[in-house]
Image 1 (cartoon, one colour):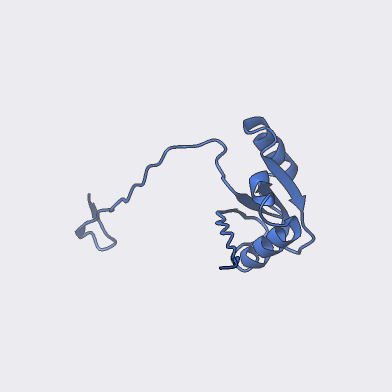
Image 2 (spheres, helix red, strand yellow):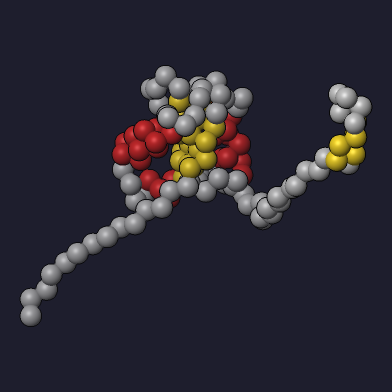
Length: 120
């Protein structure tokens, strides 16, 4: 596109776009959503919406924190990690990168490692 600048000279301007497409999946989050205290959508409304999309798959956990109101967690995550530990880890890692107006999706990888010995 060519357009005049403040001096009346014509300058060429262009924008480069980078596009990424991926399949939209339901539910739109897989593991957890950290919800700020002043997020546009209240935690309870998000819980109801996710319950309609994926009945019984998510649990809303309220948080006592100056910035974070709640965490919406996939129940499958709670089978592997104790609730208190998972919420504390999510809050500790999210609090420095979000404000009260934010909602952050969190992807969680759980690796369970075991070790055993046998007699020879």
